[in-house]
Amino acid sequence: MSTMRNSVILIGRPGAEPETRTFNDNRIITRFSLAVNETHRNANHEQVKDTQWFNVVAWDKTAERVALAVKKGKRIAIDGALRNNEWTDSNGQRHQSTEIHLNNFILLDWGKEQND
Image 1 (cartoon, helix red, strand yellow):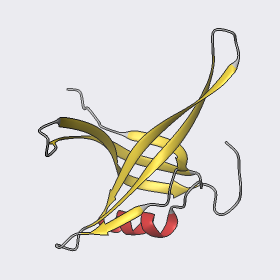
Image 2 (spheres, helix red, strand yellow; image 1 turned 180 degrees about the horizontal axis):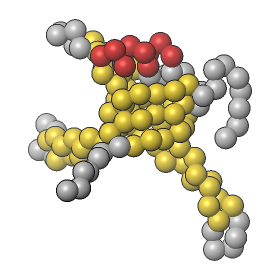
Image 3 (cartoon, rainbow, N blue to C red; image 1 turned 60 degrees about the horizontal axis):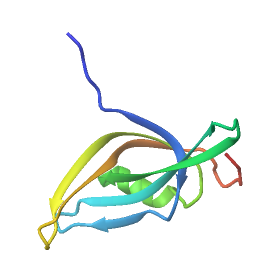
């Protein structure tokens, strides 16, 4: 019997300060975007940097920790799971997005300035 697992581990830098919201039932959500840089060689053997952006969502206690600790531009490692969202807007247009629901994170910079 095989076991399947939805798991994502990334190292990157938040593109903005995390945004936190508290709902009427006192649940807390914190969101931020994470930039992950990769390099590869193109057809001319030149090194090319490619940046991928990921939307990250944290809930409750993890959301509180993110709001206090995560800072724009400071390198972090995250562990989470992919979640797909679908909705229809007021014009009847269907949309889909994929987010990473955060399980845990580690601050890698701790205040020092670093390059990738």
